[in-house]
Amino acid sequence: MIDFEEVSRLSERMMSVRDCEVLYSQAMSIGARNILEIGSGFGGSSCILGEVARQTGGHLYTFDPDLREPFWKNINHFGLEEYVTSRKEASPWINPESIALPIDFAIYDGDHRVRAVMVDYHYWTHYVRLNGLIAFHDWENFRPHQEKHRAGNWVRLAVSLIMEADWDCLEMVDVTGGDNLHGLLVMKKVAEFPGPTTG
Image 1 (spheres, rainbow, N blue to C red):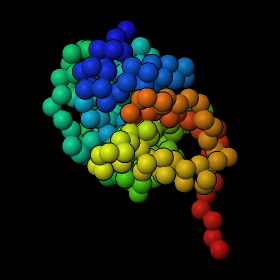
Image 2 (spheres, rainbow, N blue to C red):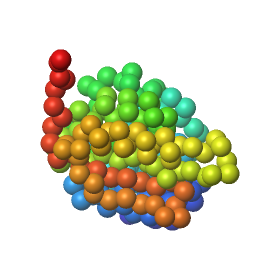
Image 3 (spheres, rainbow, N blue to C red):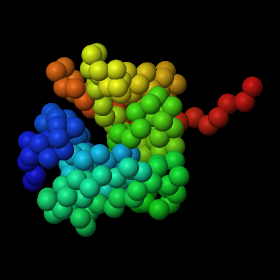
């Protein structure tokens, strides 16, 4: 079992200890084996989900077009190499058949602009199994005195639009927040999404 405080520190606090706890406990609660991560940053959530994969006999697939050197350093530090496959690509250009399906747990933590969050969600959540979990990170990442830190506003807006459209398919499971500058929101897929409508 890896230490959440160490993961938080090695990821430069991109994942708070509370984020780590919730991510780990929710993924373990469903015995997640096929795990998808969009955006890997310094590898904080990747280390947590890689540990879940180690314990369940599963595998983590992570995609990030801007893969950073600390990512693999942290994965190697915890001995998770054989449980993690990472590709330096943007998620909408990945063939879903290149990973193990259906997805048990998906976390969206890539490009945080509203359009990008919604593209990642709509592209991948179709492949999440019924009663599987989806998570959004950085939904509280907002510092009012730093204009560049608007990710939380973007993610919150994207999630509100998603919930408006898919309210009957998703159920809130857990959330972190408060003094946490990043925040993790976890939802369960409780119904399959309806097909497109015509008018």
